[in-house]
Amino acid sequence: MIDEDSLLKISNLLEQRNITVATAESCSGGLIAHTLTNISGSSVYFDRGIVSYSNKAKIDLLGIKEDILEEFGAVSEQVAEAMAEGVRIKSNVDIGIATTGIAGPTGGTPEKPVGLVYIAVSLADKAIVRKYQFSGDRLQNKESTCNAALQMLLDITNKQ
Image (cartoon, rainbow, N blue to C red):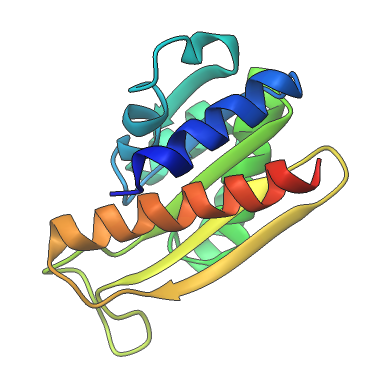
């Protein structure tokens, strides 16, 4: 997992800059929200975490359009971005973070192998989506996803 110093730095930056965050997690299963809320006082900046594992949850809770899911699939850049934007808007926060991917060991295809993950961060004026290919077991892939998402949050928060 992300080291304690980096997590405390994220926490301090979010609090000092009065930045609020919400998460929409699929393949990470709530691990980002869990990690962010391990810091005492995180309620100042962390609003909510939604585990939108199924397509139905993505549609119902985040407002993802069915045609995006049908055209690109749940594990895609487009869906990750829509998830991050959806949670940011529905939560009325500054930053929405989303993950979608294939943690494994099942579910992979040649086009979308196990370990493929998209992480998106949505801000009011832009979205950043990154594609990752992790190579661990299920838990390692979830932890790698969480670490990458938190690193993205740290990088973005440093620039705010």
